Image (cartoon, rainbow, N blue to C red; front, side, top):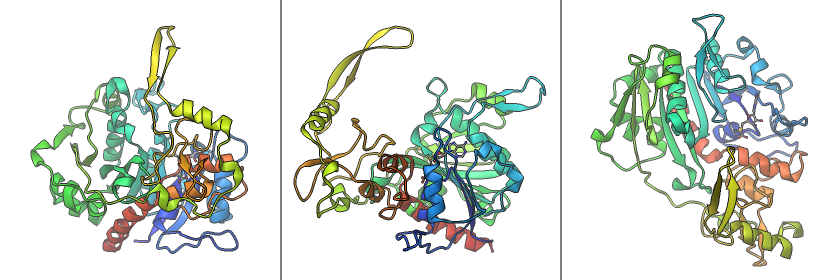
Length: 417
Ligand SMILES: C[S@@+](CC[C@H](N)C(=O)[O-])C[C@H]1O[C@@H](n2cnc3c(N)ncnc32)[C@H](O)[C@@H]1O
């Protein structure tokens, strides 16, 4: 089996940086890829802007005249996507509910613009043996009024397409990375693979605790097997529409699905010391514009302070919105908090540090943000405005997590031969 990959919703290429252990950029601006994965296709299209900064960055680091596609994924003819062993992608948490189509009573329709349906279509058309997805952790709880429904729909789609899967919610800082970023990672494998057959001989407890991809790279404390919850979402729910209308489940941070059953249990990481902000911060001074002037300092003091603000909800109902105090700046002895797309704007969630050289308060530089996600320095220095560089990092992922998952995927694929 070839180690071929496609990267969907590629952004600036976090999966590729992680899987191919990219730590440097060559003088020509290209990434120096150590392998072993061959990326045969990538797709990235930003609907909200005319200029395609993420795609331009991806294309500069990985120039391929024909293999990088910059069009809306819904417009891509799925059969034209090259064959691949591994499908990767980080996609948004949206409303995955479905209904029967009115015109064809047997058809099923999801909401327009919901990107899961695009992934699902590729799975049906291309049947990649392995799939690695990343999403926000609230995916397992969405939507609030029918908890677990969206994840249940995803599981059901994977199951109908012949996949088993394991998932884990991982906070990168728990395993030695520089950011407290909690994300769900989903690894699915088709029933035609040897890996599937091997996993089918094990118990869910064995897979979640020791034998699965996540267990091998992200060790957890032992847990009581009796606490594993089991959901049946095939026999109980006739079709996807029934899952969409009725399914509810309390999914935990780890789980496994095979056939018609889903198993889930709460797990605790065996923690490693994280990389801290102090370790990634520039030590020799940074440009003056990163430092806070008096006006900005006061704004941040207010934004990060505790406050109560009267607000109205959409029905006109007045309520008191309150926020607790944050520390006035982020400690260099800790890993970064979760980086959002608003990083670098005057915002409560923007990181503020005491510059190691001058001891004065400042925002992070784009390079420091890249280090927090474990991209090579200056990765997004590809011609986009500085503000967009922060945005790209807010959207991206902690590449070191993907690198670790990649170690296991490599072994699995080599065993398939
Ligand atoms: C969460 S980000 C993924 C970031 C990526 N993993 C990285 O490392 O940079 C999702 C990406 O999907 C892209 N996107 C959104 N809608 C899309 C569509 N309809 N077709 C293709 N890409 C889309 C966004 O522009 C964004 O870059």
